Image (tube, rainbow, N blue to C red; front, side, top):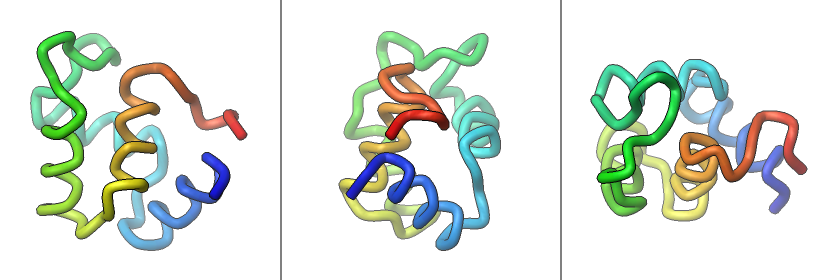
Length: 76
């Protein structure tokens, strides 16, 4: 699945787009100044998204990549 495919499915399932996901991560204390804190592990993001939004591992890792800055909303 492409990164855009992941984002589309996440939006359909949760109603949250990339900016809203970033805001939610900030509310949870995972990010600071729009960047993922160095101490936050991928497993923390995966567990959060699984518990609150019932996302699977792959979709959660896509959000992790977004928060870490590896990918952005224009990545393919």
